[in-house]
Amino acid sequence: MALIGLILGLTCIMLAQWWHGGSMWGLLDGPALLIVLGGTLGAVLLQTPWRQCKAALKSLTTLFGQSPWPFNDQASRLLQWSHRARQAGFLALESQIGHRSLDGFTRQGLQWLVDGTEVASLEQLLDNELNRLEEQKELEAQVFEAMGGYSPTIGIIGAVLGLVQAMSNLDDPSQLGAGIAAAFVATLYGVGLANLLLLPLANRLRAMYRLELRYRELTAIGLLAIARGDSSLSVSRQLAQYQGQRQ
Image 1 (tube, rainbow, N blue to C red):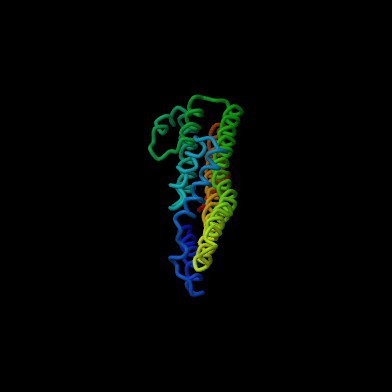
Image 2 (spheres, rainbow, N blue to C red):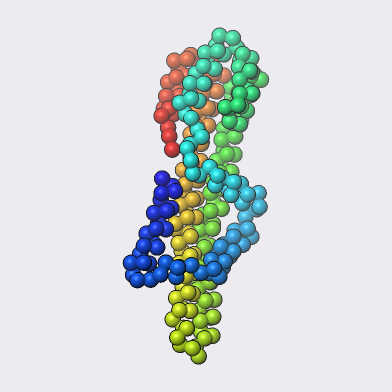
């Protein structure tokens, strides 16, 4: 749906340009694109640490595709761990730590559980990890939000530069109209980039991260229930509210 939305937005703009009798090639302007992209990236790099920018760019690889967070499978896994721990103790779960299907948060929480961490300490450790993740993911989304804020302004700068260039050709009125039209392409790029790509990307990242946080909350609740020695029925009831989640 994300790809469909992006393609739909761009297609409608180009179709409207064609409908009004304009050429779709008239929307292509290399210098304007250079100003908007370069200026936006420069402003964000100036404001944001490189590590945060790098993490935000890396997160783009997870935006388009299936959710990697299998809620139902995780709930079933936690229920099995609960049953095994009640029968053979926490050390019986040690062999599960190296399982390839476990994410880092689950593996770390299970390690703390196997190490015999007290319930109160385990709850604090898991809560700290959730808070750290939430802060980190919000910072990544803010990178694209900042780009969406700068992009329209950089587009206006590009338009002004284009108008200055067009006005330098006042002695040739035949070129004036085309020059002014090309100048405003930068504004179109700036506003379009912000509202069709950057701000939606920021909000989509937040939606996906909320899903990831829900998955990790499910994991934390299950691990804490195992640490307290809750019955399998109690664990199942606590996890039931998270099952069936999807992106």
